[in-house]
Length: 319
Image (spheres, rainbow, N blue to C red):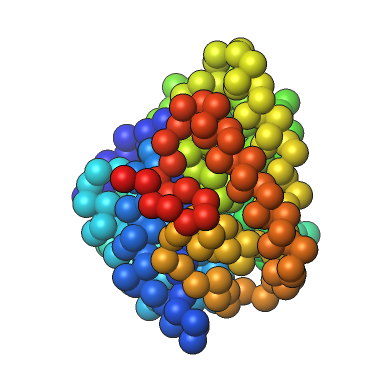
């Protein structure tokens, strides 16, 4: 039984799902990928998320992926996984229980699956209370996922739900440093961790008291995300340079994602196909060239910071 203790501070990657070239889940690759996140210094793992192509998976695949990640992590770091993917609140509650039974530390609620875009915060709160009633004792988290639409959970809504003491994780996508501070303020005193997904605000959110980062960039340069989680308070030229790199690389890492992340891993010598079930923009030759150039910059940053990457570009496995 997982506890309601807070998750550790640091980087919690939104995991990719490796597929074979014919579109089947590559479970052997998933084991290697899980090891990679841990070797890179991750504090936890978020399986079955948008980066995992969760909407293109069956319920059986979602459970199987989550269980394998939990088993592979073997208690070394905690795992969270999405449990609300559409249907009535009762149906979503049933799947929350299935995901929790895999051994995850918390089950993640997709905010836009609880209420429609035109429904009020009061409706969202009422349905969340119903979901919690139907899933007694299960630690939960929020993800302000952009699909099917982005529903933000503002500080006022959090203030209504935190007293349940059921919420321990929040993948924040508000992109607003002032709102992050408001959310952190209402969360004081609870075993609740805000993990920012917006890397432009990585340093400011961590300085404001965020527990860590949960961002897609961690599927391209996880070691640098771990580094900033450890050095955000340095106020050094190096930390400022890393933050500027995050800002400068925002556009490319979001292009043709998650295919481009799989491409970057493949170029670093990781055994992964670029096959993606999710319909995204094509990975063009221009995008490949730009990613190749970015990876040289990443390697240079690793060298400057004294960071030893697990895999290195062109493709050499670092022992």
